[in-house]
Amino acid sequence: MALEKQLELGDSDDRVRKQTAVYVYEAPVRLWHWVTVLCVVTLGISGYLIGSPLPTLPGEASDNYLMGYIRFAHFSAGYILAIAFIGRIYWACVGNRHSRELFIVPVWRGRWWSELWHEVRWYLFLAKTPKKYIGHNPLGQLAMFLFFVIGNLFMIVTGFALYGEGLGAGSWADQLFGWVIPLFGQSQDVHTWHHLGMWYIVIFVMTHVYVAVREDIMSRQSLISTMVGGWRMFKDDKPD
Amino acid sequence: MSRPVETFYDVMRRQGITRRSLLKYSSLTAAALGLGPAFAPKIAHAMETKPRTPVVWLHGLECTCCSESFIRSAHPLVKDVVLSMISLDYDDTLMAAAGHQAEAALEQTIAKYKGEYILAVEGNPPLNEDGMFCIVGGKPFLDQLKHAAKDAKAVIAWGSCASWGCVQAARPNPTQAVPIHKVITDKPIIKVPGCPPIAEVMTGVITYMLTFGKIPELDRQGRPKMFYGQRIHDKCYRRPHFDAGQFVEEWDDEGARKGYCLYKVGCKGPTTYNACSTVRWNEGVSFPIQAGHGCIGCSEDGFWDKGSFYDRLTNIQQFGIEKNADEIGTAVAGGVGAAIAAHAAVSAIKRVTTRSQEQGEQDS
Image (tube, rainbow over all chains, first blue to last red; front, side, top):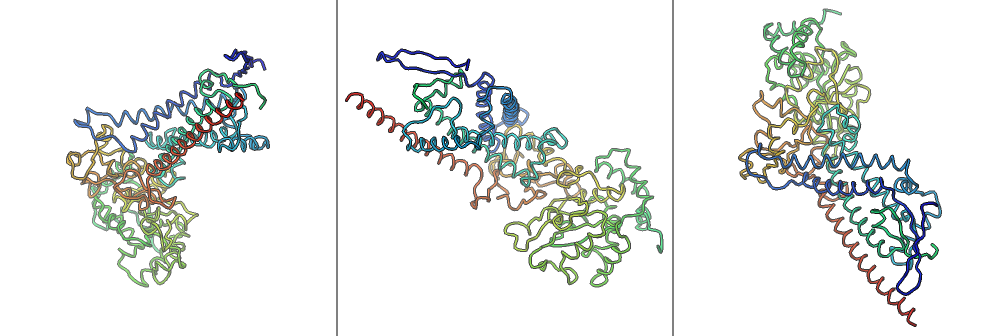
C-alpha cells in the first residue's frame, strides 16, 4: 500500500514506539461528515422548535417572521443534508474501500461476526484489549448503518414528503415522496414519525460522540483526528 | 324504454326554475370547481342536453350529518334540483316512499339504469357479527351496499365514515366498521371526506360528475383535487400569524382575542386537506378557525385516534402507552445518556486500574 507510511517516534524512555498511519478518510468524506454535523444540529434544533414553537412575539404580524426563519433554516439544512448524502453515496462508488463501509455491512462474513462479538465483549469490559481496525470496527459499522444510514434515509424520505405538502400537489417532492403520507395513514402520523426520527438521531449522536471520544482514548487507533485529517494512527505495533 | 330520460334542464323547469337561475348556477359552479368562466356555458349546455344521471344514496352506520350539510347548500338550485333529482331515485332518509316501496324503488333503479347510476354512500358497513350492527330493510347494510355497488358506474364516499371509517371505526371499533373501499374493490370510489363535508364541495362533486359524465381528478387517496388539493393551513387567513410566530397560548389570552394562530392549542389545519379556509361554511359565513377554535382535522383518516384535539404533538398508541414523541424521546434519550455516563465511569475506573497494574508489573 502506497498510502501507508511508517513513522518512527522517539519516546522519553528511549524505547522506540512505532506508529503506523493509514490514509482512511478522503477529503470528500471528511467534508461530508462535518457538513452533516452542522446540518443535523440545525435540523434538530429548528425541528424541535417547529413542533414546540417559541413564545409569542409582540407587535404586528408583518413585523415578525420568526417561524418563517425557523422553517427556512430547517428546510435549507434538510436540502443540504440530503444533497450531501447523495454526494456521499456517489463517493462510496468512486472512493476508496473505506468509503463503502457505511453502506455495505459484510454480514455474510464469519470473521466479521466473530469480531463483532469481540467488540461487544470489549464494550462489556469482558475483553481486555480491543482489536486494531483501519476502518470501522464491526460494532461501529453496524451501529452506523442501523442508526445513521437508516435513520438519515428515513428522515430524508419523511422530511421531503412533508415538505412536498407545502410545495403542493404535483410538485417534485410530492411526486417523489408523496406516497409516504398514505403509507403512514395521514399527514399528522408522518409528522409524529418524523419527530420520533429526530430522537432516534439524537440517540445516535449521543452514542456516536461518546464512543468516538472513548475509542480515541482507549482503543489502539486514532478516531477524532482521523475525521479531521484523514490519517488513521495506530498507537502500538503489536499484532491485531 | 317507456319514455326518454329527461335532462337536468327539464327537471329544473319542472321545478319552476328559470333559465337565468340555471346560468347563474352554472357560472357559480364553474368558479367553485376552479374551471374558469369559459366553462360556465359548457355546464349550462350539458345540463340542457344530457340525460340526467340517476343517483342512489345509501345510508350505513352514520349520523346523517352529510345529508344535513348537503341540504344546507348555499345555492338554492342545488337544494331544489340536485337533491330532488337524487331523491327521485333512492335516499331512504329523504325520499317520500318508505318500507317495501322504498326498497322496491331501489331495485327498480338498479335494474333500469344498470351500469349507469352513481352510487353515493353515506356511512359505512360494520363487518362484525356478519354485519348485524347495521340493518337496512331487514338485511345487513353490508349486503345492500355490495348489491347496489355491483352495477354502479362510480361510487361516491360521502363523509369521513365512508371514506376512512370515522367515529364508529375509532378504537376499539367493536362493530368492525370499515370504510367502503374495503368492501367495494372493483369500482372507482370518489372520497369526499369531512364530518360532514362542506355542502358546496358535495354539490360541486355531484355537479361535475353529472355534467361532464366523468369523475373529477383524484389525488393518491381518492379525493377530488379541486377541493382537497391543499391543507386548511395553506389558505388560512391566520397564516401570517403562524409565520410571524404569534400564537394563541391559552384560550383566554391576548393572542386569542387578537386572532393569532391556533397552532399551539392543537389546530390540525397544517395536516388537514379540505376547502374550509376557502369555501367556508353556511354560505361562506365562517369556519372553525374563524370562530376561534382550531381545526380538529375531521376530513383526515383516523382523526379520532390522534389524541386530544388541543395538543400540538399527538399521542402515540402503538407502544401501548399514551405519550407524545417528545415524551418518548426524552425518556429514551435520558436512559441512553445515563447508560453512557455509567459506561464512561466504568471505563475510567477500568483504565486507572489497568494502568496501575501495568505500572506494578513494570516496577516489579
